[in-house]
Structure formats: C-alpha cells, structure tokens
Image (cartoon, rainbow, N blue to C red; front, side):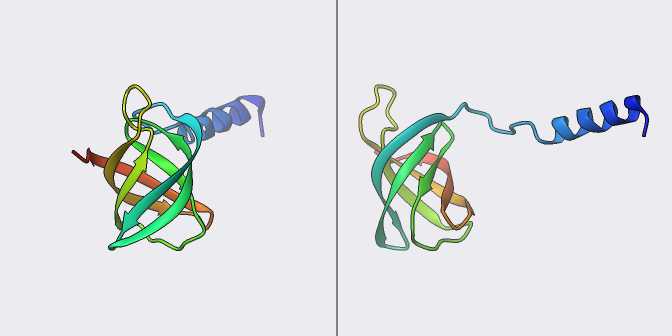
Length: 103
C-alpha cells in the first residue's frame, strides 16, 4: 500500500470516528437516583452535557425506555431533574438523551 493510500485511509477513518455530539460533555462523579417504569434506581453520573448524560448503574436497561434523572443540571450546578430516553446500554451504564427539564 502506498503512503498516500495509507494517509487517505487514516483520514477517512478519523472522519468517521469524530464526535457527533451537539454539546460538550463535562466529567462528573455524582450519585443520582433515576426513575424508569415507575421504579427508582441508583447510579453515578459520569459525564453530563446540555443534551444528555452517562450514568453508571448495575441494573439492566434497554434503549427507548423513558427516564427521569436527578442531578446537577441547572446552569449554576444546583440539583434539578431532567426527562429523557435511554439511547444505549453498554453493560456498565446507560446513555441518556434529555428531552425536557422537569418543572
């Protein structure tokens, strides 16, 4: 393989692995409670953005479940609640996409 072909392949691979997120994530390590299917669960928020969060949890979930999460979601870092949907479960935790704040 020529050097140019290798460079082209690396550029293509890098382009396909770029972040597709709309909002920057901030690392976090805060315990949380969240509600799915009328059941309360516990976990640890590992990162958060305006668009969603990742929560470490030992429970089992599936994509599409509605969720309400308590956490540091207000602009000043105070506790708030967000409604959302689970978009992925990786065996260690869940990715949540926020849909709206709870008022």
